[in-house]
Image 1: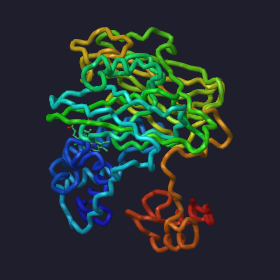
Image 2: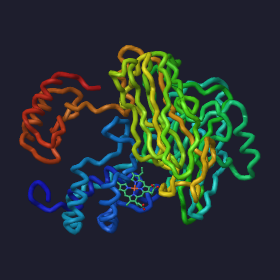
Image 3: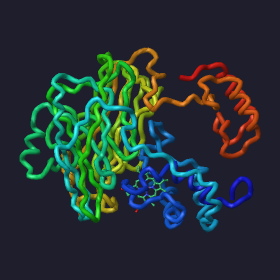
Image 4: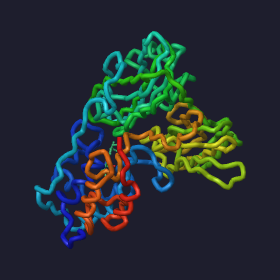
Length: 467
Ligand code: HEC
């Protein structure tokens, strides 16, 4: 039941949740297997939607939001989950179509502007319609002529119905091009890596709906002259053959880079035991790694394969009195791995220890176990091998980094009227909504109601200019 005693309806209550959290992928031409754009489409899957959201399977978001937050976090609130299940229990009533908020505008081009260069797969690749997953590496020569200072890389999949995720790498040795030349079809096969020790094996990543990492001014990374950008595409199962020609938008920094982004890698060499997974066992590994200087983390990407079950990454102070939580992935899902970007630069002081804990379920009850029956598994790049990596992009810490935002421009929370200043017009809007109990625009402290605490929140910011 809604707060006003009325039954929950599709157009008024459910459509905003589905359109805001699901339709980006669940519409024609996108990766979601069924569209959720109309009442009939959503109602047909009502019970299934209630189920997959209640177990946290959809929307896809593997990090635990109670442990740490990232840019682009996709999670439903307890209230939204309740609305979905109330709607299903009430028999999925449609309600008044006039109350439907309308489908959001899904931009098709770049999400961050006009790129300086566009790198394109040399020719389209056909992913067969045989209902299997495919992992393939494509080599994109950069041909910039000199070292390039990069502000952002944006993967633009050529075919959204099959592009499930992409991992970028960098090669300055020609080995990737040689592997490509040795394979008659465009690109070459590669599951958990690029097939050799690349200059960077995690230069960025993309999953549907992700925003590219756009470094703040002064921060960037360099692509050496003549290097090849590698794009490892994961194509999801499809019943019909589909063709893809993915592009990568390259954005250069306007000024020379003052602070170059470096990738720290925790790997099997940081474990105190050999990385071997016996069959029919759940194994845990704990890597540690000293932090040698004050650093500011930008993003984090734990990486393992199909036997991987969970991850926990954090940093501790030398006296163990302070713990900085970084990421917890309680149920690892290979197909939804990615780079997770911290909302602001995240400081780890010198002398702290970085910890990476991973568990692997090498039993028959792991539905993703590639070996039937379970077998001895060791480190390697193949589907049946495993990995233990945490990739962390960072810059050396500078005073004030904690307030540098890495997400899209943060809206100014008190600027309700959008006039770029927190002032009297915002106060009047709060007063006009005073007592509001649902869907309130003026609910600044996000407690669901407009009360005196929202007025106090506004007074605390009064007079602040917004960009
Ligand atoms: C980032 C893209 C994305 C978003 C956002 C998303 N989905 Fe999905 N959904 C998928 C993909 C891809 C699949 C196919 C299964 C897979 O690959 O994990 C899927 C599968 C499903 C399925 C079928 C499950 C099955 O096992 O067959 C349902 C139901 C579903 N999604 C509901 C939702 C709902 C409800 C939301 C919003 C609350 C949502 N999805 C948000 C991409 C997405």
